[in-house]
Image (cartoon, rainbow, N blue to C red; front, side, top):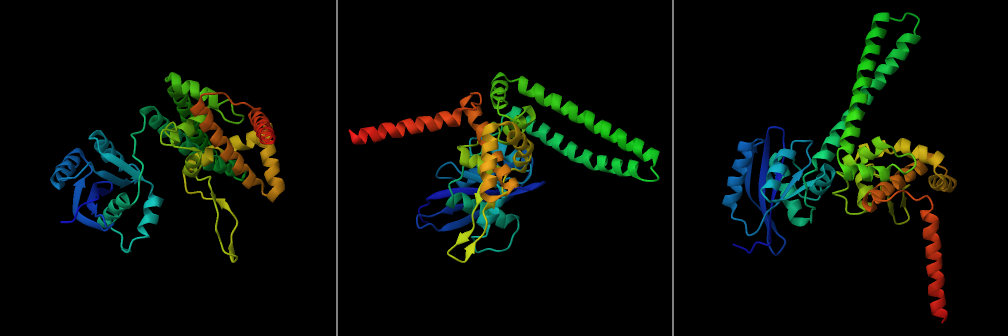
Length: 354
């Protein structure tokens, strides 16, 4: 038997059952799949998984990789995290792109589990951390509010069409008004719960207060951002945050023949992008810094929406910075920074002359 360099378990998660695959990597970088297990998405199934893992006789603690399949991966991820395993949860698009690099073109639960195990052996993946209960509750509430607003919008359109017609049906109008009233009441209730949840934690309340000093950013925007990023606990730097939101610029050029226009990737959290749209428009009107950025970009390429997206990206980075540094937004920060840089460059120039 060859010496084993690394070991990994890949788990393909489903609604009722999961499929696990155990793979090893040898010093010559060869990957070999050794065992497969199908188990239920329940406590009894998780205990079966633990017994299977014990029989594998690992040389060290396993890396366990799974795909973020809706919410079906959460129970097993929490269970394995409690048992002290190194769990990594990868985004579906990353798993899909990695699968394309392999020779196998078929797709089923077993092959997907083997692909995740191979990915864990060949890639250095970040460890998954269980979300804090407060941020998890915030995420559920903010997403429920967003869903209710989407449900209310078409009803309002139907009501407008019905009341503007030549033969309006009063019974239909009455029912639509009642539905709108009910949904609006639920939205108000959710917003109250969001506010109470933030105020229940002194640290979060203080940090949200700092974030809300940014022009255009209110309590709901701050709540959505911290909910979707789990309080920035999984964010290592600004670039990773921008990429997670799907606001990173995607370039496609090759030689002299391919030179496509750069655009944002959209491969990220849609809730973050959505919640930053109106704050960006407000900031363009009422914040001098953001207005200057918007005008400068529009004068450069003439596309207003593209400039507005740049403002969204700027606001997201500002939220992250104020949250981490626990400080209020300074409108003169850029001016002070440029003055300091100018002063430092002059000092360096004088030192060289001396």
